[in-house]
Image (cartoon, rainbow, N blue to C red; front, side, top):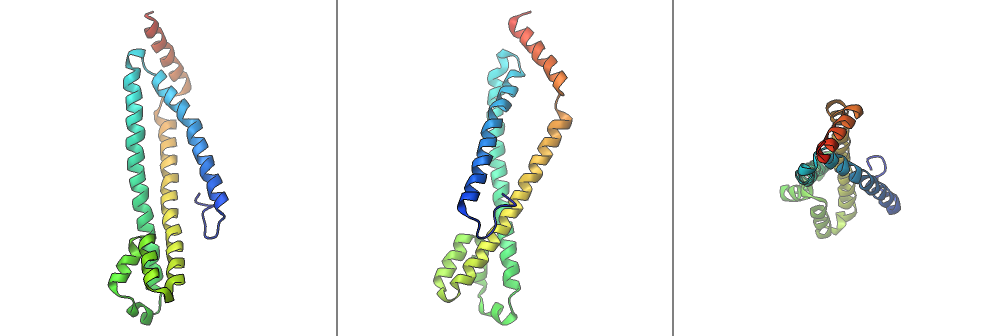
Length: 177
């Protein structure tokens, strides 16, 4: 999405990218869940399943919050740069209340644009480009998070042979051997 989502991009491209992301998550989710629950003795599968659900739900909530903060911070910073890049005479015409409202969110900027129809096009264009700058921050954070997660999995979790031994051990325990 970082490389696709730019001003003027057709909706179908964004929709296709999100569909591919959803498909990838759907395809990866079941094996990941199965791997977790099958790596414990049967008596503890409920605990493993509950732990997996907690991690997924809690992690999703935390990451959604972090991405939201980054999106908002990126939007606000980009819009602030646009305002400070205006000539001084134009900056003086914008009240501090309007600036604060513009920096809050895209919808706040749209409300300001509606209240000032003579500047509506400029405000909406500035809000769009600022929103896209904010999404870049969130996408970069997502990429970094995925890379850190992949590194942790690669270096910290059991290797394939060790995992097979654990599966065999748990299977033997389940059968009472």
